[in-house]
Length: 196
Image (cartoon, rainbow, N blue to C red; front, side):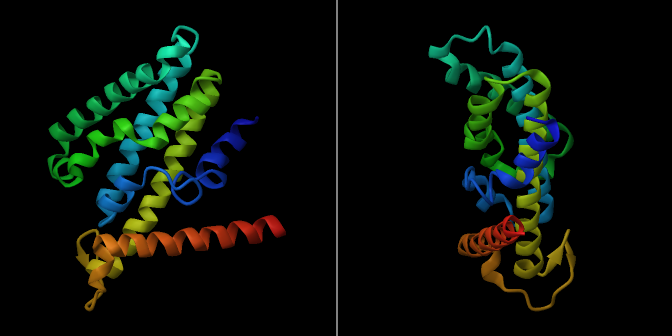
């Protein structure tokens, strides 16, 4: 498979949010603002790229019967580094993301890419897969976060842009509603593109 196809698959064809619907806890919880969405997207992307890199390097050394615990250790290491970095240099974002930052360790997206791709493919394709899947996740949470912040809170990056926001959109029920609409729109767009 070409590297461009691997990248495109992660962003569009196998988008972890709009197609696979995995890793939903953090998606629904942190997308109340663009800033939180971007921070979580970048953190997930960094963990995906780093863990795919290391797992691809160690795939011939890790025994099959302990591969999942080995994946978790590798992923947890990257999450810990990112968490420490955010705590030291981006305290408000670190506090805003709360428990969802350390929960990246058990995010289905990262474990799935480690198992399905990095453990069976070479170094460069695994890195590209991590970048593509991370970008797909980031784009999805940014779209969701932008809609929820603008129309739910009436702000964009904290600047007031709408005077009468729809408050339910920043609540958990609003996250489900907006995500459902976005998934439906994504499927309609993909079906039309395949038909052409």
